[in-house]
Amino acid sequence: MTDVWQEACLNLSKAAKIIDLEPELVERLSCPMRFTEFTIPLRRDDGRKELFTAYRSLHQDATGPTKDGTRIRASLTPQEIKALSLFMSIKHAVADIPAGGGKGGIKADPSKLSEGEYERLVRGFMRRLLPKGAFCDVPGADIGTDGRAMAWMLDEYEQITGIHSPAAINDKPAALGGSLGGHEATGWGVAKCAVMAAENLGLKPGAKVSIQGFGQVGTITAQTLWEAGFKIVAVSDVFGAIANKSGLDIDGLIKHAQKTGRVSDFEGSEALNDSVLTIDCDILIPAAVQDVIDESNASQIKARLIVEAANAPITPPADAILLDLGKTVVPDVVANCGGAVVCDFERTQGLTNDYWTLTTVKERLMSRITLAYTTSKQFSDERKVPFRQAAWALALQKIRAAMLYRGWC
Image (tube, rainbow, N blue to C red; front, top):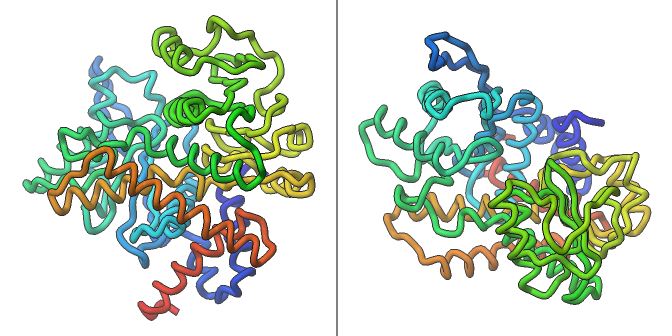
């Protein structure tokens, strides 16, 4: 199964059965509340005009205004955006965030756009996006976008409305009302979940960790676990993989990657011909893209603990294989919800004009992540259901309550 929307709906179906969710609500949650597809006309630097396709999926807003993520990549599909909006509904509910699920994107290759073209495309997305606003739908960053792009979005929104509204866009620079800790939030949350799960399994600092993906999330996760005493024995990026059985110097590796743009040829490491997914380690953290663990490699994974830093990195058939092998999987909706948590903090700070210190942000983030992990783990243990299904079931209970109070069922 490679359709991430089908995978998301399968997880929804499994969790719905656990809590006997009403068929009417299952039906409502099995499709986005609103899905829009629109085009953005872009004038290229050479004067040519080109149309780009864009999407925005609002999964449900019973629990609050929809938000996050704007993804720009050449192979973007409507199914991907729909699935990600459903994931956001679940993440927000798991972390007790009063928000619904939203996701958007543009089908384009940022590497083939000049800086001016990229900016015009991002601003065009904001102009044509409806609905939008701090109390309606709040876009944020994702693959192919960053704080700079969010700054352009905010500026475009405020130019259109004539109103300063820092809460209308997430993941923007702190100078424009963004939250401190936003860059690190997801990685910090993944690392926190890894530490808690490791403790549950009797794994102590010094345990071996392999990380697939050394982008923003993978880098912060690696650094946080390394500083906590874990051995990062293997790391990969799109260009290759490296390993050191005694543990990599993560501070040095980060500097090397910033200088060269890749992890390859780092001093004190050797090129890894085998996959970082199947290397001998205690903890595996897939932090790249979806569906990297499937039926072809699930049985080869040696790690006792897998913590999903990426969205949907394990296919449902592979999930079943890992469960049969006795592996522990901390699901994405718990492990990587840190970014969503700090986006909620960002909106709160923007609405109140009360901006928090980095210490305050991190303390509150760790409290939310701990609660999301422990309640999901407790539900899993009590109901004797897999961790993933437990997290989804807990989230669905909260969404169900909001829908019933509103009279939607």
